[in-house]
Every structure is written in structure tokens, then in C-alpha cells.
Image 1 (tube, rainbow, N blue to C red):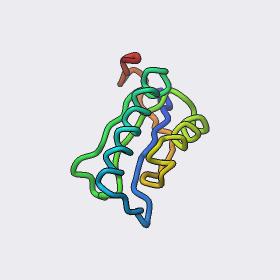
Image 2 (image 1 turned 90 degrees about the horizontal axis):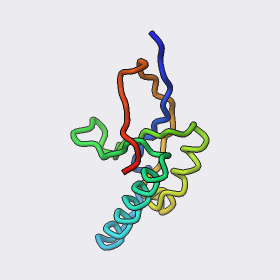
Image 3 (image 1 turned 90 degrees about the vertical axis):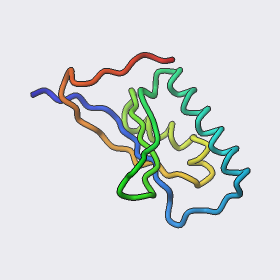
Image 4 (image 1 turned 45 degrees about the horizontal axis):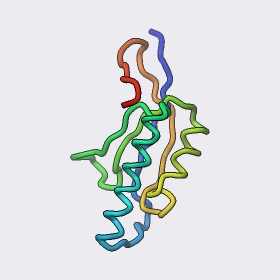
Length: 107
């Protein structure tokens, strides 16, 4: 079986989690989502989304990138939520059997 590497980024809350007001969180989330949309439009980001019913509440979401580990780490370091200390990225390689999944182009 041939495995195809994909770059994955787990976003999680840091420890300790900094405090933000409700208004700050709303504004930060809006900037975070806009940043991810920009990455999708550029073709760097293939898919992303939040978790639900995860075993660790610190795990917030997952993104799959079309770029390598170093570039994904650099790109995610510029995410507004990462820059603000609300999220921290964990970058790794995800191996998937060839032909098993496909991602649509930029929206």
C-alpha cells in the first residue's frame, strides 16, 4: 500500500489558557476564521474545522495543509488566535493510503 503524506495541524488551548473577555473572544474568532478562509483561497489549506466530543477539551480543531511541515508551522504561527496566545499549533505528518481521500480546490 502506498501512503501519501499530508501536513496536519492540531490546534489546542495552551496551558495555562489566557483570559479574554467575551468581546475579545468574538473578535479573535472572527479574525481566526477570516485567516483560515484566506489560507483556503490561496490553496495552502485543504480542509479545517473544529472538534466536537473530543476526549480532551483542549483540542480545538484540525487543519490539513497542501504545504510542508515548516511552511504550515510558519503559516499557523501567523494565525490571529495563535499570535494572541489563545491557540497553539501542533504540526505533524498524516499518512493516508493513496487515492483514499481528495480535497476540493479553493472556494
